[in-house]
Image (cartoon, rainbow, N blue to C red; front, side, top):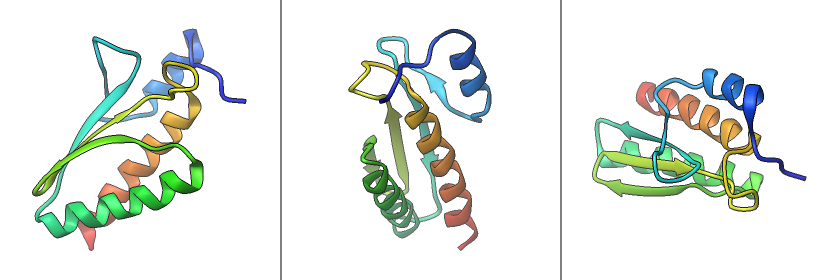
Length: 101
């Protein structure tokens, strides 16, 4: 069962992320990834889609050319959960890997 992150657990989880920010209008986090090309951005999105599908936890995202804006929130708990943190950490690693490809 997925649980909403609150209190100290939430603060500790968010402290592990770099470049992610909390949204003001809802319980979610967001980050914009920028790549050299559309192909690199699409490769990142493909990696992300495969991981998200395995997790059964899908991001909200928007892509224009080399930019991918990602928002994460767990709809089952109407807010942040450990699933969001796990996916955010994966996305950061995937972005670094994509940049080095």
